[in-house]
Length: 283
Image (tube, rainbow, N blue to C red):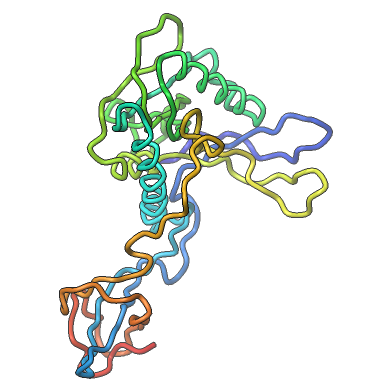
């Protein structure tokens, strides 16, 4: 999917407006190693090397090969924090809500201050409709069967927000649309899907009195009862951060027992878990 041309990012100087160009995931350049086969290897107490191959990934938003791995990692983080929000909510479940401004406000997303104004208005509309709190994901383009969305064509511009959160949504008059898409069976799956086509504002601009630039906008935010100020969550340790599963041993092993290896044998590397008897995988 190629987003429509939005113009170049300009430096913020003298209070001038900062135009934004919205870029979808996977529209940058990949590294040479992206998508190649590497392996995790561990040695059993009997001295046997077990090899578990996997695709190498840079897990970057921009990478056309690995952006789905980026989305998966970020969706896991959303799932962890949302679990605490669900636990502390009145209804103990998460719903998926769309908050969409009327077309006459779409132009606000064309520059930095306008986007922040649009987001603040969306927060107000969501709260007025009964949304108590959640994680907000901004979409600049509309995707779905109603549009031509292949990567060779253009997406249709239509700024809107998706929210995974808690609330009891009531219909409201006016130009804004606030629609409850139902209770989520999986926060992770919903977040992953949303992130695969959630854009970023391309480029950076400098902060006052700081030499390091920062991103112009945040397009994934936590608001109301699930905001960082209100919902203080401990930093979770996900299972995959401390252990790794060996399908040959059929058990979880400490991550320190594993090391990465690259194929040094002849021919294409095996892609299934196996025993490395010939020493073809090397660190």
